[in-house]
Length: 210
Image 1: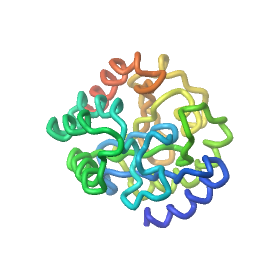
Image 2: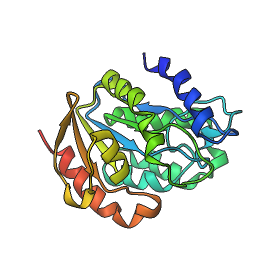
Image 3: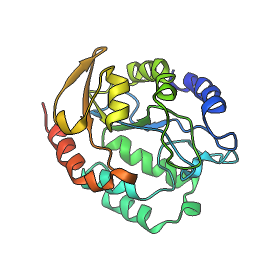
Image 4: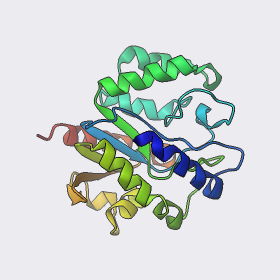
């Protein structure tokens, strides 16, 4: 059922994304994972954004920094993590991408972006763009049905939860909406890298909840 969303996400890519890039979807454990990570939107840094790519279109393929977060949270094996840090973007093969995400699946994690429209860089997107993905995002989350959903950053948190959110004021707070359990966490990469330790602290707390 998730794959039925691809075409709809691709249509939005043509409207809101870079015309030379492909939309990026989701990956990891797709049935009742313990954790779901929701980032903002993909960029050309992902090797799967190239239209000629014939492998899976999962988030963060070919990148390095975000995997430090997963490793420190014990959501990816050390051996896989070390391979990621050694590889250049062009060295990510289809098989290696599948291996990485199989490892995330084994760690009970699902990863997605609120918006799937790939941009050439990490330029800010207007709220309206993200809001146009909400209906499909809710359908995606209903299908996957995670136990707990981590929303990264003020913008994603505010749009998904339908209220103004400042992560600094809502740390470790549970939000219940549409029969799902959400938490708002600092964005841990890019301009938010300096908050990665706070993000790790909060996610470790959320992971430990019963």
